[in-house]
Amino acid sequence: MSGVSAAQTVTIIKDLGFTDVVSIPDGESRHLYQALIDDPEIEVYLPTREGEGIALAAGLWVGGRHPLVVLQNTGLMEAGDAVRGCGIGPSIPLLLLVGWRGYPAASIGALPVDSAYPYTEPLLRAWEIPHRRLMSDEDLGAIGEMAAVAAGTSKPAAVVYGYAFTP
Amino acid sequence: MTIERLDLFSALAAKRTNEVVITTMTATLQWPLVSEHELDFDFLAFGMGHAADFGLGLALARPERKVIVLKGDGGLLMSLGSLVTIGRYGPPNLLVLLLENRNYEMTGGQEFAAGVDFVTVARGAGVANVERIDDLGSFERELPRLLTEPGPHFIVLPVTNSEPLPPVSHTDHSTRVTNLRAALGVG
Image (cartoon, rainbow over all chains, first blue to last red):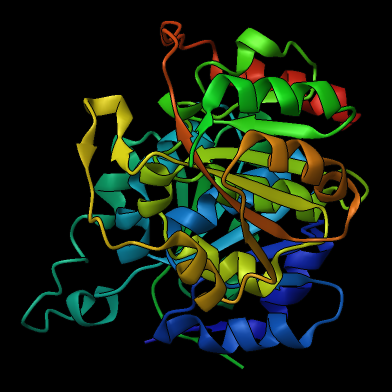
């Protein structure tokens, strides 16, 4: 088991110039969500569903802001039409921080396997959304790396976190 | 009472100056017949039901500029939760004009649940300024106020249409975004 520091993640998010975070928190990201809420330099928006959040983030970006989207893999699946229509199609470089529900148990062979687990990375590949894994503080560079990929390609990119954020 | 949709669009186009106007789906296919403006943004095919969500983000990003969203009631049903988000974060520069014809026009006019009251739903979601305007004269009288008064506003407009619809035109999505950002001065 591992995890990622929410405080360090927020520092990186700010250093990369993100101005807004659109997030529907999952159990694994609640510490990150709280750290973002507590930071006065970041605007945080909590939509009611992930597709709505993707469209909101796209509007922010078109208006000149630099949004990050934080959502669970289940929400990514729900948001498919918005990811297509507000990210991939119009070349809007959204960075998606995706919680990988099911990974901790599946990675140690525990049963039953959460049905959200096996489709996460294949779904990103099917949408041609490049991604990196974020499993510990040592991987935090993945956020900047994929932010650069999104900006360089004008397409969405993703960072997938497998464990709960720590405070 | 209802409003002939093209008359409503003409009235809006006559008073609109430097506001962004976001349109989407069949309910707004006639907008280009009355408007050709660099701040018109065609959201068609950007994501089913999400025009107001996109407009909310744009309004939050550009607080100095009014953002008008023209959308149909069927599209609203596809992202009804967005009213809660508008109720929570809706900025003063957001104006949503809901074109109410009580059916899914794009797919052949299938009627949806007859009991839906969009004014009550929006108020219950916490949207600050919700109004129903039933006739063209009232819309023309209230429009200058809606374009200047701090919102957010959510206006329900019962519409009919007796005019032919222009064909659906899927222009390049990226170009639409590039053009709007340029018109807004976003690099």
